[in-house]
Length: 358
Image 1: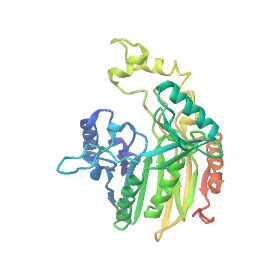
Image 2: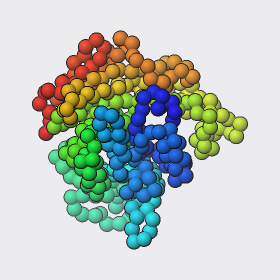
Image 3: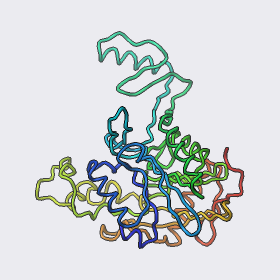
Image 4: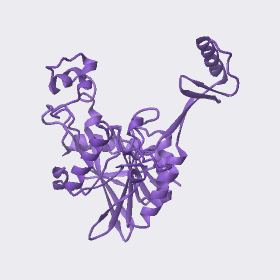
């Protein structure tokens, strides 16, 4: 943690799909070390109210609030609310979502018939069907619709509205793996949620989690960074791993972390190591004057794609060729949001003067 402070970090988000990996005690230990290092943190707590609340950083120039959320998580990691004298469940600040599969009527009827054959029950009638835990409805074309859980959205928005009146700038950050037609496109429910957070008073919305860059949207003059990619990704040089990590690969008790890495990534030929985009990202640097956003600079970084495990995963400024490729990817992925990015001297600059989406 001290290395993060040394590198200039002041605030961190604790809500992500690994928050609950080692149970409530693991979460508490993480929070304790983060606090001891002097980092302001948000997103995890002893119950839902604490996990959801904003944290504040006071500086000489401004007071900054952070609200941390995760939409990708196992259910046991989700914080629960206290009620009727029963203590809440420790965990992270969740944003749940629903997924509905839209199919033509003939496809729905085929699913209805299949369900009846498998269960031995009469077909369920109507315009919708729940099949193997997934909701299907009829529509003119096949598509996947996702929507944020309204209770979660409303609860988080209330926190943001409060925080935005107690701070000069408010950041909402979400850990979200969910994508649309591919991993570089955010799922529709994330777009809905991001807009709602800006409407509630957030000055910046920042996403992370899919391990790749996603586009940037200017909404009502505020930046939405759907994913900046990875900044530090040193997951291969940990000292220990839980026993269950080794079981899927039939690795016996004498196997170590290196054996696990070799099996999981097939000696760097599968998974993260050969996937170039995993190791490319940007650092976003917004500038405000008098409470108004005047510049959003994007500095391309590289995490050592193709380098040995002992070296990769640490952020470095990208060389000219790699930086050009990273910024070009970001330009293309931001275009659907009508966001223009100009590249000058190896740095991207978002055109914040352009008409933003409403």
